[in-house]
Image (tube, rainbow, N blue to C red; front, side, top):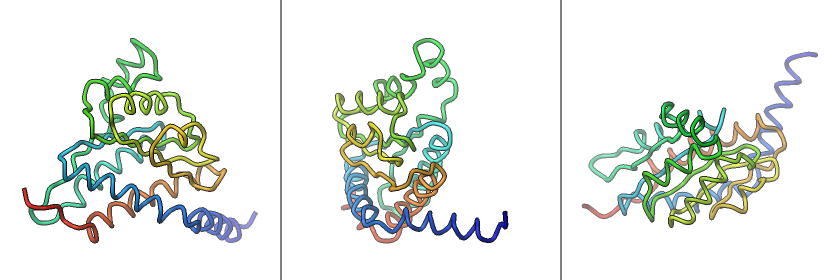
Amino acid sequence: MEIGPYVRRYVEETHAALADPYLARAIEQIVAVLLTARAADRTIYFFGNGGSASTASHFVVDIGKATIRGDRRRFKCVALVDNVETVTAWANDAEYAKVFSEQLATLAAPGDVAFGISGSGNSPNVLEAMAVARKMGLRTVGLTGIGGGKLKDAVEIPVVVPSNSMQHVEDVHLLVCHLLTAYLRDEAPAPPPR
């Protein structure tokens, strides 16, 4: 197979997953939730599995660091995937489905944000975390694809990438990360002074 046509097809398929108007609507809703969390000094918890775990960590670095401008309030972000000792302790001593929910039960407070990422929308530990987040009074955001799975109905703001390709879904999730970061850095209004 020639590589050129394959590359063009891949790029066209990714572009198609970005062309739907769902993206601008979702970004608008997520920005409002994140700005409210920042203004109230609340924490945003990011989590996911595999490639989505990497995206969760990436979100925390970008939103926590790249959005700093002057002396305006910073975003408080935590990647629940980054504490290997805690993740493996819960996985070993309880079950893998509880690795994020138990951390939220310990760390989170009403008004915080749970931001789950699952390409299929059916990751048991992401769904369990969202159930706990809702009971605790957290705002909930979910990035998913492949029809949305159970996650699309388990969160307040679902972002369902219209693709059945995990690669394209994850491509768009990373673009959402960078798009949110850029908007929150460049365009989002500064909150009132502390």
